[in-house]
Every structure is written in structure tokens, then in C-alpha cells.
Image (cartoon, rainbow, N blue to C red; front, top):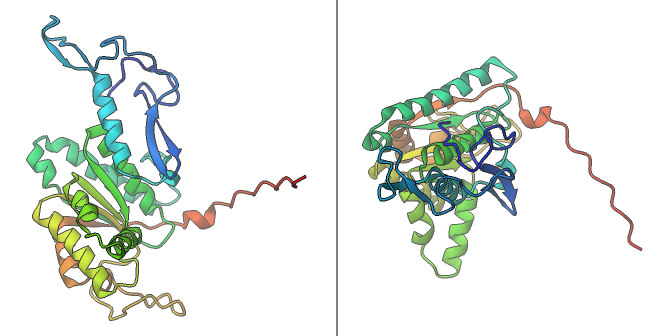
Length: 295
């Protein structure tokens, strides 16, 4: 990440490494909060503007680095990343197999290519990434890590949405008599939208209509989509839903999202397999603290 150093932060800080921010779980979301090492910015004294080093005069004022960092922190917060993933970075992704080394390299390569594009219009048109593979392989970790890089390192507007939660929010809105525009429109406008668990749900006609509208509108707006899915991007298998009795018999992604959405995703994104071991199975559960009996 091309991190900006905060003039009021300590470059040797173990928590922010001079960036002035810590990512912490706050209620249900991950938030970018001022680091414990931070002091009032010595360059702008908290005004957000400082003399342009090129000009050297007071009237030649430019945004201070501390102000840019504050803006990027707000964009990270607006991404609505779940608190559970506050720790997720590219460097914290566990590498326990060659497959995970390869996928981390592919994700790093995508972000590096974006940084080298330079032209804002080329960045807007950049192809996205769909990370696919079995559960527990770290797909969501990588997705969140990319959003963190994009918001804090680049200043992009981002948004994370878990597909089944999006469907639930829309259904609640319709039950109240609200339209879906207040929920879908912001997802269309952000620079980068990350859809977790694409293909999850019942795949009803109404759900397929929602994913079609969301992907199609971003397709037409030339905006980048990132996604994760448990379903393989192959030709249709003819299986409508996962078979718990025969896990090898599973739908392909096209069976879960429909031909139209799948076709557009193939045009918009590169599909990257995520293999390796199941991180959840390999991580022992934390022991629960015993409850203190009530008096």
C-alpha cells in the first residue's frame, strides 16, 4: 500500500507505522480510528491546510497530509466492512500451501497493475477479480484486504456487501413499502464494489433480478466489481442447488446467477481460484470463559 505518513504520528509506531490510523472493530463494523501515538499535526496545527512546500508562502496553501488521511479513513468506514475482518491485510493472509502463494501473488498483481495505470479513466475501467473456491480458503480475507488497500492507500470509494444480507435488507425495505433504490444506488456509484458470497441464497427469480440489476448497472457505468463465490466458473452442470448428500454434485456459478450476469462478469472480471487448506478447520476454536455464578 502506498501509505501516506501522518505528520503527527510516530514513524516507529508499532500500530500505525506512521500512518496515523488503526483499524479496530467498533460495534458491528471495522473502523479507522486515530492511532494512540497521534498528536496535533505540527504542519497545519489541525487546520487541514498547510503552506505548499513548493511555494513556501502562506498564501500558497494545499491540503495537509493529515487531512488526506482523514478523508481516506472516512472512505474506509463508509465501506461497511464487518468487525470480524478488521485485522485482514494482504500481509496477514496465511500462506500454508503453494495454491495460497499463487492467489496472493495474483491479488498483489491486480493491485499493482491498478496503481500503475495512472489515468483515472483507465482505473475506472479496470477489470475486477472474482475469487472462487471452497469455503474457508480465505477468499473474504483477501477481498477485505483489497478494499483496505483501495480506501486507505488510494483514496477510492469502496463498499462491501454480503449478498444474502443485501437480499434481506431489500426484502425488509419492500415490506415497509420502500423502493430498493436507496440501497442499490449507492452500490452502483462507489469506485469499487465487493460482493461476498456471490451465488448464495435460494436463487429465486427475484434474487436473480437483484443481482442482474446490480451487475448490469455497474457494467454500464464502467465500474469495477470484486467478488467471492463458492461456485466454479464453468459451463452449467444442470444442478440447481447444492446437494448435501453428494457434495461433488454442485451447481456452477452460471447456474446460481444466470446466463446474463455470468456473461457480464466474464467480460468485467478475471476469475482467480483460491485453493489450499480450510483455514476454519485448521484454527482451533477459542475456549469460552466460564460464567461467574450470580449471587
